[in-house]
Length: 240
Image 1 (cartoon, rainbow, N blue to C red):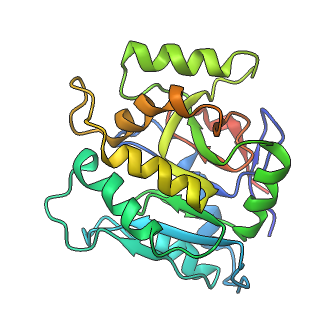
Image 2: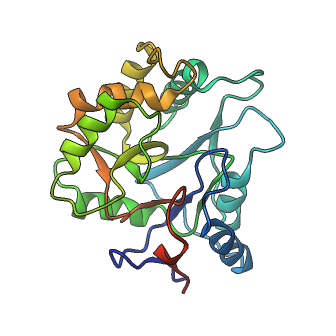
């Protein structure tokens, strides 16, 4: 199966994430319908990578798991039964808990509600090794700085200097990395208070850590791995 292409960079991301409770993600319906029309197939589970997500059982959850099932892959799920769910309070700790059960050297996380995997996650491991030398944890990139806190934007604009990309802001809804480093990062996140201007946002917590972790943490500016579709122009994505 040939995945959709980001025409800005000529890349073929394998994770698509329609982040945010808003309607400004015009390419998402096309990408989702394209994937739903693809035949079922079985990907051989890789000893290099485990796929994880958070799902508390809310009826809106489960899209990511269904996309993996279409590839014959199972997902390690955390967060079951937590109601009400609050991202800042619950997400870092739940991710940390499931990471303690992961035995593969790499791990892929995607939000359950609004993400899909369209091909073998083992391909992502090779891309991380080839395209992100020296980096151990790679987050998907967004066009929008959320939460819109000036200090976060300043750090991420500085890190993105020279990238030539509008996709420059960390989005915590999809990431891939070495399991040990991911565990260390989310252990730090679980101990970090949310930003007072974004008290319910775990993404604010992750952004607050970025400056101190930038030697090993990268953002996927060219969408080599992950395509965030919130506020991305429809013409950004061409279907195979």
